[in-house]
Image 1 (tube, rainbow, N blue to C red):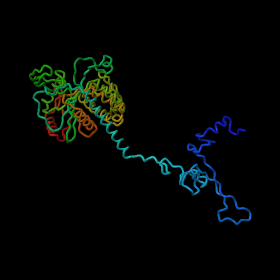
Image 2: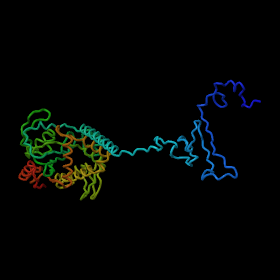
Image 3: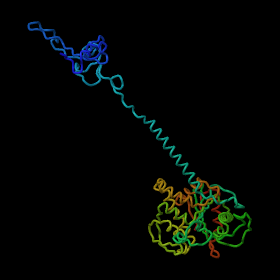
Image 4: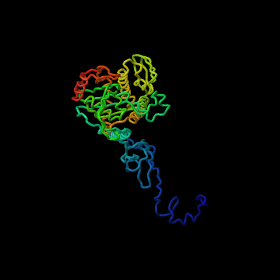
Length: 436
């Protein structure tokens, strides 16, 4: 009778001389698979025999012996112990399974290197700041219109201490559509005239902002034409100051002011109607507190007394209004200074400077609409802005040019006060002269 499982024959058993495995009759042991055997302790003593020594009568727990004769954990060898003899089934006991560290312990994640992280974070932030700053500088520098060549101004006075900026607001309508002209009440006159003129002096003894009324009485000195290069003789005719600009532009205006005052103008800055309104709108409007309400059909002004936020159109009407006041030109210059103070304060607030969605449109609107001299840098422009902000904020002095009276509808400067003022500016001294 064949007791082998189905599928096995005598031939399979008897002829497997070189076959190894289960039931193999071969002489060599199986090495690919080791069978564990159970070893049990000695049998209990027969009845009547003496009691075994202490502990000898306790049956030994079964242990597993591998094919090499090692018993696990019974003191015979230090091989594999299943844990059943010691009661330690899991864990990292002696001879137990080894952890990832190879010594019975598990490797821990290394602590983060905070110094390294902070270092690279700082490097990344500084690099980003440098890239943004450099990019912003070249972007802003490309927007400046350096169209005024002050080297064409002849017979100039000597330079003094500090820096003098001539800031001009013109009635230029360049680039404006008919609809924009109507909206801003600019009219459609050809050419350009100056609606406002100011000298800003910066130095070690504070800054001073001096408004020059456009109706100031002057004579046109000898000058060199900005386009032709031809030298024209001086005129004895008395005209308003803004006539110099209308006659030959910025260079003749600088020449006339320098000849009248003896003060050297270092830089020239001009902004037109559209640019002015664009800056105000970009910054989100400017809050003003008006002492009294007024209307002017010529400028489009229609204001009530009290606090209110002016948009670009309203701001332009405010700084241009002259017919609503008795002392038309002098009151207008005061309004212009008051508005510039509010505008500078609004532009320099954290809500504008730290908000790129407001800062860049404001800067773009301002720079794109400015006309400056060829030597004007962004650093000069920044110096001018911060000095104006300081003056209009109360850190410096703002005033009108001292006036002694009028002649033929023109405002006559007080010569004695004007000379004292100019000497103090030339020497960068604290200004003690007061204006109208």
